[in-house]
Image 1 (cartoon, rainbow, N blue to C red):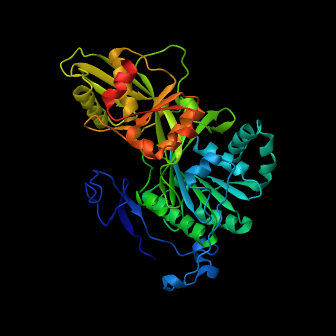
Image 2 (image 1 turned 90 degrees about the vertical axis):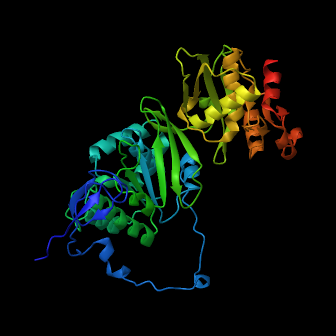
Image 3 (image 1 turned 180 degrees about the vertical axis):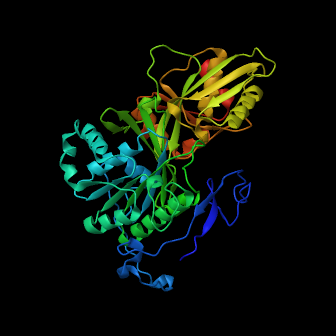
Length: 464
């Protein structure tokens, strides 16, 4: 009789230890080591990893002898997803999608499965029944007659055993596989329950082996923990090729899909969706929803031109400056780095002459975005100065420049893309650094380009 082997796994980072310890030696977390059974059973016939046709030992080869043929990506009807993935789905890739419960992960993947015409898609669910998935599919397709025909190529499987899933895969030979979710799967090679560190790691390893050997794209839906990171061992994110994070407030209609890891493209791209009753709608022009429509001229509001990957966005910066009632003034920012805000406030006080030492300053980036692009520094400074002077800034103006510690206005990259986006949205003036004029042909634009070298020059032009 085979002796049962047990080990202790950290539920935060996946570190394996032969004995229990109060603190994990890898991530320094307390009381996270849990005992699990790791003794493997004998391989069963029909399992993917034991197929005799794939028992070929790899041998080292010279790099110059390896032949490479560029594989065409699978282009989905979802332009936003294509952008985040780097131009489409790569054959044989393993993509992990994480997000809060109810954010729309399952809806997004089912919608993709229904829109993939001419491709056989297998949607494996371990959380919902076939009837529940059918109800969601009917809700998605009732407003889109073009999706009805795609149901002929979308197969639904409610199963949690990886061995049974691979048996169905060998029978149906799907071209795209969707797993909802990885925490519900379990492998008979391990005796621990589903959702444990060892099970999640083993199931992901089996799916990774299947994806690479069959060149079938696999999408994994994963839960997140209370800290906001994907549940399970950190090694899970290292095993997959792409990690997508689905973000947004469940009480709001807009969702943001961004890549935190991508072996086949940039991690700077993002996709924006609108959650409707019949599914997720792509937002092709996010600047229109990030800029609030207002009739009255309000102080403390300015428009900044930023970049997310290669996509230019115009966002609204809101500020509120009021006299502090306490000894120490408050500094609060939402969607913007608090330390950078303090730096810009010091520049305004030193170079602009604003007495902010006894003022509370609140800053907000609308739309729920978190911006790290320094190109909105000038928009932040103008927004704070507008609220301090209680003078509104025209809705037809936008700003794209970085502010240095000496009050100088520095040039930013891809300023032509920012100018083109502002012109397309109907802005009449854009403020940039004078050092960026050498790369801009003003004859190509109808928008008025104003260039300055010092932040005090901008304030003089705006407020007099």
